[in-house]
Length: 328
Image (cartoon, rainbow, N blue to C red; front, top):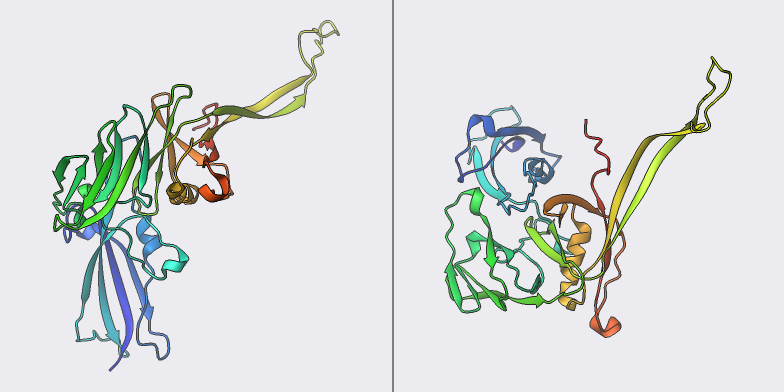
């Protein structure tokens, strides 16, 4: 008999692979085979990403989960299918994405979790770089070599290596410690005039990535309100005080926006800017606090050294909260 129905149980959990409990069962899905199709497909990515908590407070924690999928197969009589039943597979899930041209389930980077080959840091400032521990054996920053260990726990699958201040190059090697996978140039920027702002966003690999905005910055406040006209007559005297206004405001609040500039960057950074525009999660380090922001600029004209000579991007961000606290 042929397979007629499949029931998929999804266990989503943190820790080590296979360490799931009954309480980690998040979904049970059942599908029937369509006509003469040979396979039964399940789309689970949006279900899984609900359990990846992408909170950030300048702490650079590994945000990923294990997903164990157990498929039970049944025939036309709803009897368990005897061949390879149940089928169990375990995957490590990050909240990343591929592009349309990458086709179905693309394999993203298994070493350095950034697209560009450059990072920009303020002079005398250390930085963070995300790597995928499973695929990296060692990294060399200038002449200092560091071995990478992978315990198998989700809390260290994404590791954020510290880039010392005023470093120049980072080399990422495969697990064989010999195959060079990526070389990243560290550009140390001296900015004596403006205050650099650190933007952190979730990139296409599901990792936190920093992008410093070095040049001119403008802060704006837009205010919303409503008004009504009130009666200011004092009944006892049949008069009114001239210091009392007929028009009064209510539901007053404000929204702060920041217009920031990257400063001059290399064309290679276009990939990073694109991922910033496509992300759902962005934060800014502002007045010694990590605050959520939303990119308000919605269109991006890619700049090149051929067309534009020097490349600078101006991006407007909106704080993801109102000026007056309205949290209830």
